[in-house]
Image (cartoon, rainbow, N blue to C red; front, side, top):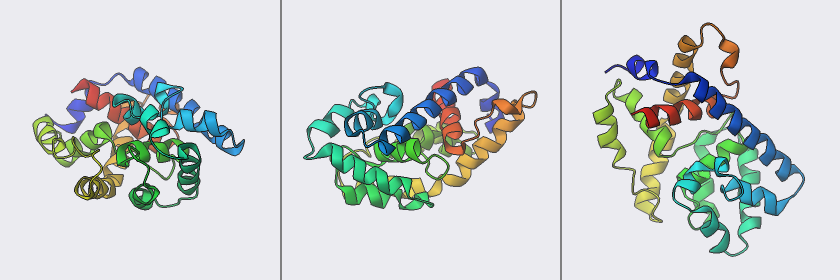
Length: 214
């Protein structure tokens, strides 16, 4: 199966809806941050008040644990978010996450938070986006993408080995996420205005659809 065969199966109307849902979350998060609304901001950042805030946290029910099992959790999330918002290069995201030392706030949850705050610079590195990256890397081979993905499925444990695996894949993904966006234009020929203008929110919506479809 080729990459384009995989794209042929996607529900593009659903992808557009997904994108606009996440765009609204991004705008709300930034508003909460600017208004210093610490409780609403941190609840949304880790998907507690709205599941669309952080799918990585939602999928493993990590939001409540991040907030409840870390001392001064809300202020620490605010501080790490301030660093995300200042970035012009997402390759430093894993180091920011590691240095923050927030339990359960590892690369998948943390990179998703970075993207929801600064989505023109930061991309999401979670199971869904990693799988989409891998399927492009392997020329559309679902079986090869699935096999390599297994290397990362246990990567949320708090260990240096897991961190290094996720940091390495994070650094590799930018070009393929951009390629996903480029390919998507072929499927929106009749109305390219539907395409998400914020690049990494758009690639995330497509990645999620690719993962769900396969």
